[in-house]
Length: 443
Ligand SMILES: [Zn+2]
Image (cartoon, protein in one colour):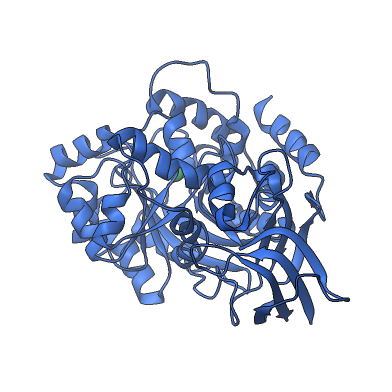
């Protein structure tokens, strides 16, 4: 049994509690209670604000290598995609293990205890199968285990280069022969206490409606999470409307995908009916604001989705930055820019998106709360650094969500194990690991 004394802890309300004792046994929280103002002896002291573990619900780990290298070429998402494909072309299982391990370790430093890896870089050059067709997926599972974070591997069905468009050379690395081949491959991946296997439909550009239904059936029958990129770009909507007379969200609804286990990633360019469909299904929408602004995708207005019944989660997607506080406040700030009005999503609602609701959309409903019975994920943010000095308890949640950065995270506990202490990863020299891994795939 380990007892933590938290100077402040967020237990789910609109403001944090002071002097909270959290008892942890076998990786789970067994008791949460009011402590005394000064910590008792023999406890682990967490100074600052302690939050449940943060969730990065949408990651493409290899894209971390692009950071800082795509800011000169003008154009659109589609120009950026060419640069992204050049990096994808260079990655093999060995270099991917190093890159994903370092990227997940960077996430741990930012307070992420669970990552959703939207995995489509499956095969070798030109689409050649590895001896184990799931080699790349297993590399990602190993990388997360080494970095100390839980993972949901959202294995992605990817079949076409676009609607009625053949695969190009890079895309052959992503693709299975068909939805049944995807089922056969993915069904061979095993789950464990720290790893779940979920399903993903890359997009309604890359997966035809019939195949999307096969993937949705697989996820529903096994009660697994199902994610899909939905309406990230206007061109995706236009292609679907031209080919099928329906938006991507409507196609997914007809494929039987929209349900409580479904997460629409981006959900940027939706019409009113799409919003009603996603909200009515109780689906989750995973917003990735730092990537969406980097790629000039547009602004997704999330309040109408939560009003309709959807939940929210957050992802750093291309890893232009890895900072879940930056993602969270961007949901609110982008909506302010688009609406000319302030305060659509408060700090507590944004924290729920990046904790309990994010965990749920990745298939971990037993995580994301500082409460008895929950997995013992504790993330402590220093309040005494230059960004937050001058804080007071009443406004500590707002201060953290609207002004903290990943560098303010001092301690991270995942399933009862401390993986970040005093702002350092306990196992990995993260800057060195990133430097070495990235140099291997970009030079
Ligand atoms: Zn994505």
